[in-house]
Image 1 (cartoon, rainbow, N blue to C red):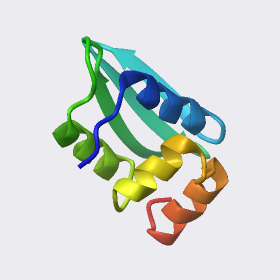
Image 2 (cartoon, helix red, strand yellow):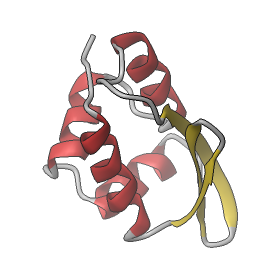
Image 3 (cartoon, rainbow, N blue to C red):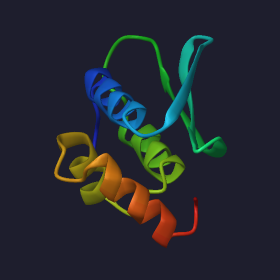
Image 4 (cartoon, rainbow, N blue to C red):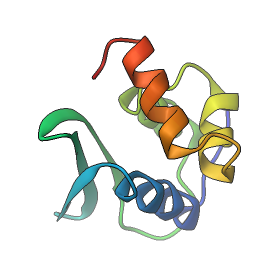
Length: 96
């Protein structure tokens, strides 16, 4: 199980913005909904409080982003997995 810093979650959100429409909400949680070509794809959220994101929440986020394992999440966060490749991955898994 991996842990994320809130800054790393912001990196993921910024990467999504490159090819997806992203709606943000703030209700004590940073809520993210993302759309591809006008079609709803998914949503995730992150606490706006202090500290790192606990591993159990990271696991939920990974599922909400349709990533298969910690390696895919780390690749998406650290840029070996580009936004274009993420779109291909979502198409292969029939989420878009």
